[in-house]
Length: 358
Image 1 (cartoon, rainbow, N blue to C red):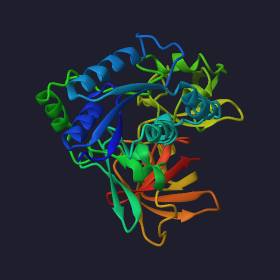
Image 2 (cartoon, rainbow, N blue to C red):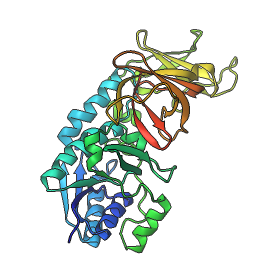
Image 3 (cartoon, rainbow, N blue to C red):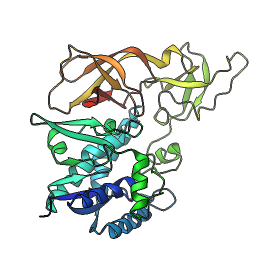
Image 4 (spheres, rainbow, N blue to C red):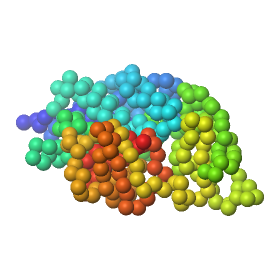
């Protein structure tokens, strides 16, 4: 008897290819689904959609599964890109990948998968799901260097109940070996980095197509002018490259970093030295908290949190500020805490949820 039907999000990359292969080998009825989420200036120079679809089709053919292509460009623009621009206008640095997961991959995509008759949907994310006493938990991947639970923290119980992450207990190096052994054409394909709609192009160049430049001064915390900026939207906290500030005679010779933004006066606050006190924050406040279990954890005990992807878990105390906001107080001050990014809480391997840094 054939196992249930699983629709796999296939990007053209090796992770989603091996995801589909493993499920097929386990006896599931597998349908591949390729998503197109971006249409503006989608050319081969920056966005590799055309080649990705060719790669996904080649892999689907090798595995022996059907592949359907769907266009979610409108949903992406409405739900993800408009938010992305709104946040940058406000001087914050959003993380569109997180919203793409909760709004496109596990909403628009999941709805489509259900219409195709799927019981579950699977992606090539490095994470794990387990059910405990009727509640679904999101867990870190066994391969700590690839764990993507940070990007999935906005998923809810309904979404997790339908989600499968077959790569969660496999090392990335093993994934490529599986792909090569099974003659998948993309076994050596380079992993995609960055946001799909930006691709490999210069970020500031892309953003300037959508946001106006409003030049102003770069100043030190003491108010001394250190240089000029092109517009506060084009910088992020902790940024070192692209500031265009020389050392100067009175300078310590240490590199400059963006410490904060004075939106009211259109000034970019810059400091020298990676460990400048202005770059270290012992606590932060977060809004729009989402708890995966549906309710907040027990705040009487301590947890750990990440303020950015690929960061080590940092021990912290969590407490409610008001109906919407939560405060994270860290044992060790955190570097370059960035408004608009996500802070994500963990209890060991369990991802509890997170919110947007204020």
